[in-house]
Image 1 (cartoon, chains in turn red, purple):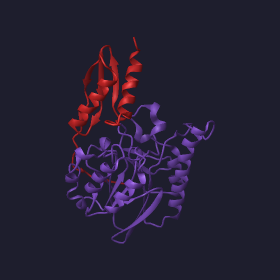
Image 2 (cartoon, chains in turn yellow, blue):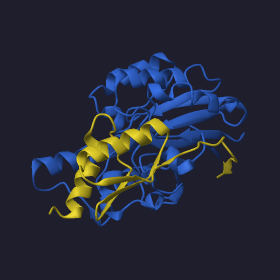
Image 3 (cartoon, rainbow over the protein chains, first blue to last red):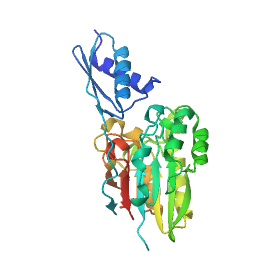
Image 4 (cartoon, chains in turn blue, green):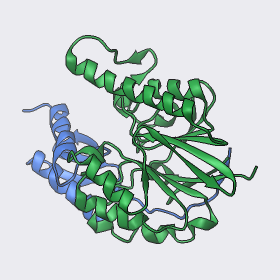
Length: 81
Length: 237
C-alpha cells in the first residue's frame, strides 16, 4: 500500500500543476481512506473544482472538502503609520 | 505636508468567473485612498483572457493604480503582454523600476517589481553549486540590486516599495517554515533598508499575517487578499 504521505504530496502537486486549478494554498491530509482538503478560496465553483482534481489524483479515497469560501469585506479601518 | 493614503491588495487571482465581483468592492475608493497598489498574482494562470478581466476590473478608477506582476501572472510566459494590456487600461506596471505621483503637491515615489525567493538570512540558498541554483539565487540578487538603484535615484517625499514576494519573515507567520525560501528573500529587505523607504507592501503568502518590519525598521504589510479578508488595506503615511 502506498504511504499516505506520498498520496498527499501527489494531490498537492496536482492542485498546483493541473491547469484547471493552479492552486498552491490548500492543505492536504490523508487519514486512512479519507482525503482532507483545507484552505480558503474565492468561490463555490473553485472549491468544487479543487475537490475534483484532488479526487482524480487519489482514486479510491473519500474526499472531505473542508475548504471554505472567503467573503471579502469592505476596506475597513485605515492604519496610520 | 499632507498625509498620503495608500490602498493596497494582492493575490486577487481574477478570472472570467469573478468578472465584476471585485469592481463592486472598489466603489468609493477615492474616499478612502489616494492611490491603489496591486501586489501581483492578479490572474490565476497568467493568460491574456484573465489579464483582460484584471484590466476591466481596475480601469478608469478615480485614483491612480500601480501594479506589479506575481508568479501566477508569469505561468503562461506572457508577462510582457499582460503588462501592456494593463498599461493600456491606465494601470502603471512596475518592473524593478520606479514611478512618482504628485498628490496635491506631495510626491509619492513607488519602486516595485515581482521580487523572488531564496529564503531569509542564515537559512537561505547561496550563489553556489549547480547552475540551476545559481540561476535561482542570481535572479533575486539582480532584482534586489535594481531596487537599490531605483530607490537611490528616487526623488520623492514619501517612498513605498511594492513587491509580490516577501522581503521579511514576519509577515509569513502561519505559512509552513519549509516553504519560506519560495515565499521571499531577505536580499529584498536588505536593498530597501540600505536606501530607505516608508513602507513595503507585498502579497504571495496567503497563509501569512499582515504586519511586519524589516531589520532596519521599515514597516512591511502583507496585503494578500486571503490575509486581509477585505477589499484592500489602507495605510496612511
